Length: 56
Picture 1: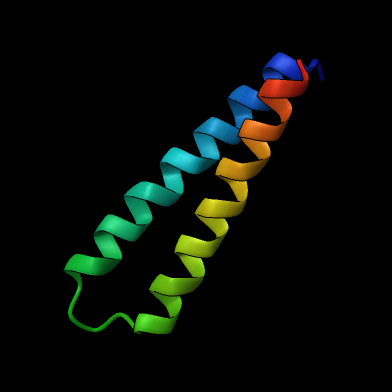
Picture 2 (picture 1 turned 90 degrees about the vertical axis):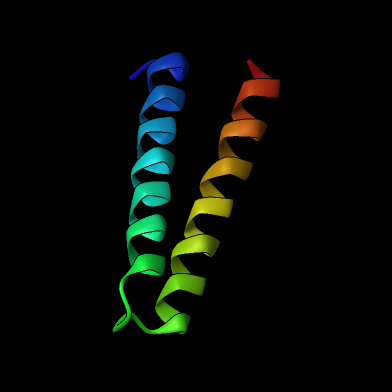
């Protein structure tokens, strides 16, 4: 897998997590800890995307 395609895959995962966070925040039964965990995952992906983009 090339670096460019890896970055694109990470971006797709980041967008999917964004959608999941949005949906979770609208659902009344979702645990706030679960939302916080999703946001942390999203942040880790964003940091990895940034790191890889600057290295390219």
